[in-house]
Image 1 (cartoon, helix red, strand yellow):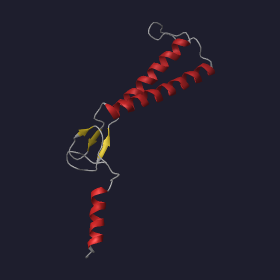
Image 2 (tube, helix red, strand yellow; image 1 turned 60 degrees about the vertical axis):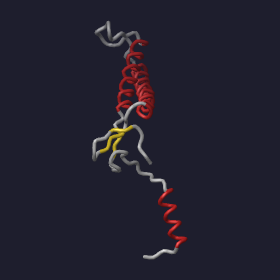
Image 3 (cartoon, rainbow, N blue to C red; image 1 turned 90 degrees about the horizontal axis):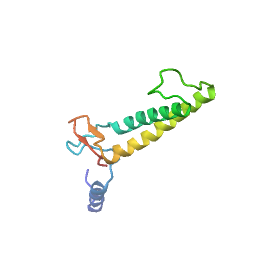
Length: 121
C-alpha cells in the first residue's frame, strides 16, 4: 500500500511518539512480565501479626508469657480483634507496596528471568 508523504510523516510521528500501555522487559523486550510483590505480602503478614498481638495485649492476654486463652472472649472482643487484624493487614500491605515500588526489583520477565524495578511503558 502506498501512502502520500504527509501520511507517511504522520505515521512516522505516531510510531516515534506513541505511548505503549503494555510494560516490557528492559533486557529482552518481552511483554510477558509479572509482579513479585514480596514487600506487599510481607508487609501484610507483619501488619496482621502486629495488630493481632496488639489486640490481644489490650484485652489482657500476653501470648509471649501466657499460655491460656484470652481473658475476653466476648463476640465484641473477637470482632474487634478481627477488625484490627484486617486494618493491620491493609496498612502493612500499603507500606509493603511502597517498598516494592521504590526499593525492590518488583518485576520479573517470564522469558529471560530478568528482575527490574519499574516497567518501561
